[in-house]
Image 1 (cartoon, one colour):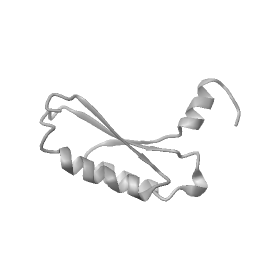
Image 2: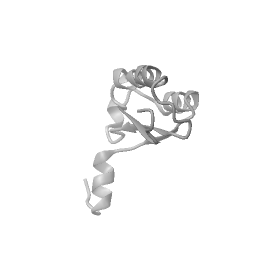
Image 3: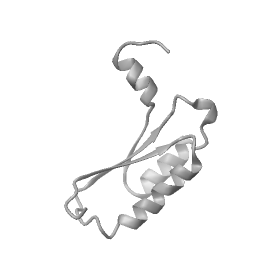
Image 4: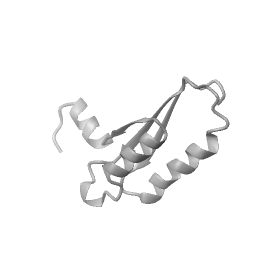
Amino acid sequence: LKEVNFLIYCFDVTSKESFNTIKMIKDGIKDIVNNKKCVEILVGNKTDLEKKMVVNETDVKNLASQYNMQYFLVSAVYNFLNSFNLKM
């Protein structure tokens, strides 16, 4: 990991445990990743499950800010359907 240039941290927005694991992983590898130019991105997946979401965007924004990362909230389902102009 010392020469890694890009890291994506992905979590499930319907699982607080999944979200909390990101901080543990990030803290666990901070001494291993020495490349100061490494781009790190936080991705929350399953936004299509709005009624089951337990991680809100404010929490995501705060974690991303804490670690100086960009963040994206995505849906593999919606992104897949939109790629092929399909309706759900």
